[in-house]
Length: 254
Ligand SMILES: NC(=O)c1ccc[n+]([C@@H]2O[C@H](COP(=O)([O-])OP(=O)(O)OC[C@H]3O[C@@H](n4cnc5c(N)ncnc54)[C@H](O)[C@@H]3O)[C@@H](O)[C@H]2O)c1
Image (cartoon, protein in one colour):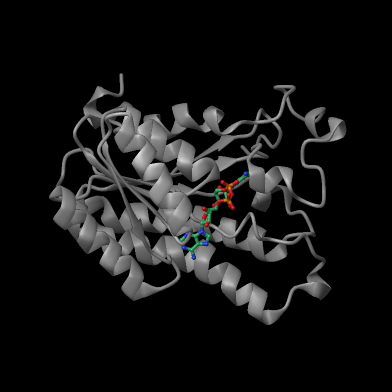
């Protein structure tokens, strides 16, 4: 069903570990040429080497998504290495390093850094790749949102507001890039059991949390792969500007 991805070129940001690594692996296993990007160079290089060891076409390129020159270089280097770009997965985000804190304890510096990565990063990555994706059949951008804006937890005001901005940005980018033939959609995961989530000071997977879900188990990175491949491929060719909530049926936003 997703065989239209074979031979195409994808960038995954924040691909050194966690969900980003799972995304990059799934796209490579679908036959895509994959650029893994991160600020964690050791993890990113190792992950790309492991994918190459399994016969996949994968390279690592360092890029800080909050830095405009860095993202422009990532887009240019990817297009040079693989002759264009078909898919961008804006997964990088400040999540693992995010301390839960009340609104009274979130500094202006933290707020700015959070928005620089989680919001501006998505915006400027998308704008940087658009000229290279323009007119390529099946061109697609997938943004990593979250159910945090729907839950509005008071412990992560900057993160929740930033992910709400990602959902809105998904719509405005979808409209902006429609003429270029680029679809833009988002995935909003609930709690996903990555190292980053499991190391939080609050147990996101406690029994009372799982009890609120229809699917009575913690989410895993593998639960996001079907939605990712769907949004990257022509299986979703008539969808743009949408956010898919993947949270075991906890929030039910609509
Ligand atoms: N795990 C969850 O429960 C969950 C739920 C909803 C959404 N998300 C989102 O999914 C994404 C991945 O989450 P994860 O659980 O794998 O966490 P994670 O912290 O392990 O992954 C984030 C990745 O982004 C990278 N990154 C951070 N700042 C960057 C920057 N400036 N430039 C480039 N890369 C940068 C990190 O190095 C890391 O590899 C994040 O956007 C997160 O907000 C996670």
